Length: 137
Image (cartoon, rainbow, N blue to C red; front, side):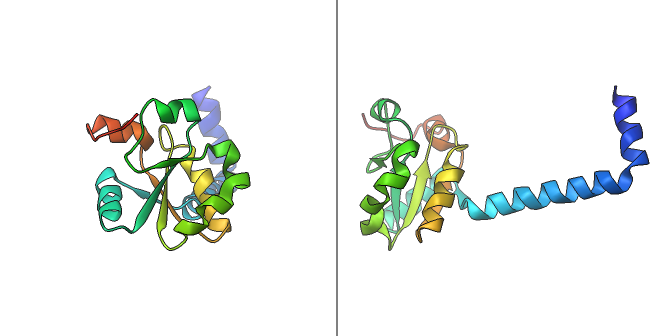
């Protein structure tokens, strides 16, 4: 199987190369449109300087089981309809937090389309908890 794959790549090197270039460009575009990744340390520093607002997009039940102090919950499926609630935070960076950092990118892209400055917590609440940082219930 691997031999056939390698044979295909060598025979169709232009097609394979084009595919690889397109894939890299798509990944870069997605990364750029979904906001930058912030570490837990960067998030903490921004919040302490009053430069950031934390938006937790996990479902309400997960949010209630433990969230970052000062964060507000708007689940990802409600974000478009409740975007107006975030207008009061337009002068700050909205830091999006999800469970693992995977879903935050889509929310950041939506926020950026609406004119907000958005970033995401790398690793989500999982990375926050793994560093033994405080959560409230």
